[in-house]
Amino acid sequence: MIGIDIGGANLKIVDDDGVHIHYCPLWQGAPLADLLRGCRGPAAVVMSGELADCFSSKMEGIRWIVETVQKVIPDAIFYGIDAAFHTRPVLELAAANWLASADYLREDYPDAVLLDVGSTTADIIPLNLFDDLRGLTDTRRLQEHYLVYTGLLRTNVATLLRSVTLDGTVTPVSTEYFASSADVHLVLGHISPEDYTVPAADSGEKTIDAALRRLARVVCADLDEIGREGALEIARQFWDCQRAMIACALERVQSRSGAGRVITAGIGADLFARELGGVTLKAGIGEAADALPAYAVREVALR
Image (cartoon, rainbow, N blue to C red):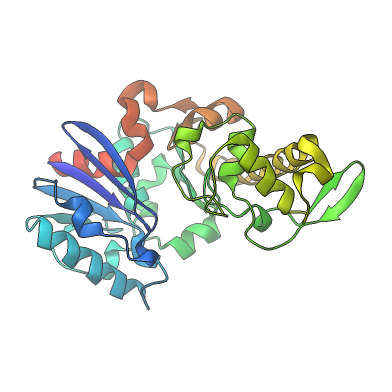
C-alpha cells in the first residue's frame, strides 16, 4: 500500500522506500500522471488540488484527479471528509488530507492539537474533536481557525504585511508578488536552500543574496538602497506577523478544545515546535512528518 497526497502545488508519496515530494503545480498543467507512473498499487489517496484555479469548480478538479490517478493506479481508493474511502469522484473528497492526518493520530494523541505547517497553509486540528471535524469544508475550517492560509514557502510577503518600519519610518509595501515566505525563512536561517523547493517570485536563484534582493523589492527598493539590514528587517517583521497569526489561531483552538499539548508536522515542524512549545512528530515517524497526510492515509487504509 502506498499513500498519496495530491495538493495544488505539491505531490507527496509515501511507500516502503520512503517519502517522495515533487513540485507539481496543477494550475500550470503539471504532469501528474507521469509523476505517478512509478507507483505500484494499491494506493490510498487524499487531495486538496481540486481547488487549483485551472478547474472551474471543486467537482471538476475532483473528477480530473480521480480519473488521472485511476488511469495509472486502477485500484486506488480516495479518502473523504466523511472519514470514508471512495472509488469514484464525490464532493466529499475535496480537501480531506488534514482529516486523514487526524484519523491516523487521534488514538495515540487524544489530548493534542496537531499543527501541520506546510509550504502553503497551516492546519490546526484538535484531535479530541474528531467526530466534530467530519464534514468540514475548507471554508468552515477557515471560519473555525482550523485552517490558516499561510505557509513556509509560498506565501506572498505582501499578503501579511501592509507596511514595515525601516529606520523608524513606517513604509507601506508594494502589493506586487516580489518575494515569498521562502525568501523570509531562507534569510532568517529557518530553511536551507535545499528546502526552497518552489520557484522564486522572479524565477531567480535561491540564495540568501537573491532572497534579500527580492525582499528589498517589497518596498520598491534595490538592495543597495536599504541595505542588507533593511531587507532583513522586512523578513523579521513578516515572520513576527506570520508567527503571531498562527499562534493566535492555535491558542483559540486549544482553548476551545481543551487540548493540553501541541504536536507539529510539515516542513515547519521543527521551527514551530521550538517557537510555540510543541513536540515534533519527526521523533516518531521520521521524514514522513514532512508528508503527513500521505503517510496517514496509507496507515488508515491499512488499519
